[in-house]
Length: 269
Image (cartoon, rainbow, N blue to C red; front, side):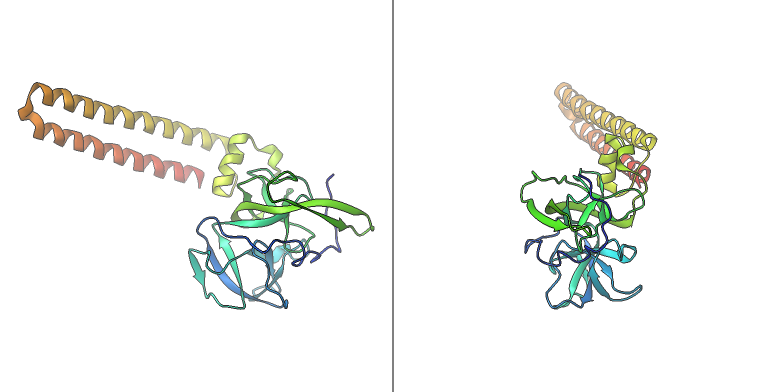
């Protein structure tokens, strides 16, 4: 059952729901922020600035989602930590991190955007126009390993059971541009890698470039090595020029691989 946009549930979880651990899963850039709570903000929590352009954060929710800044991570989990400081929250603003989410608005699939929710610090499946922290790289539902069932009460006093746990998110704070349902499988996969929607045409061109480059590399390497072996077998004195030709073929292959990688990167960026 989809539970949409409850007001009045802000900050309900504040430390009650979340497990005591969560770690960044790939290098990220983080920055330290002050917080006003007496207890540290749990790793994996979404946080927003208390005031625009401020340096103090609070648990993120639909009310303060416009000021969403990132995900709290452990102090030692960042590739680059700006002003790390004990007693302050270390907030990842790029890279990938484990993010606390719930099934409040449905299951989360890999490639879905993760948005702020009415529950303080917890993410949920995004809808068009939602404020999002990034794109999920793993799925989450009530059967996911480590998922915990919790009971919440809406503003009408009705109780609902939801599952809470972690997903790996490629951090890219912004606004959900379109419904995930409008994306095909290839686009969802690309979105989970890049953090944004890539057109199908660009994806097809990128795949063609990859296949052509791969085929060319195999042909060059095979021809160089096979031809070299045959030539040396027929004329051992030709070893030096043959090895030079093989080396040149391998260098050409490396150049083709680099050019193909750059072309694919530009297409997907």
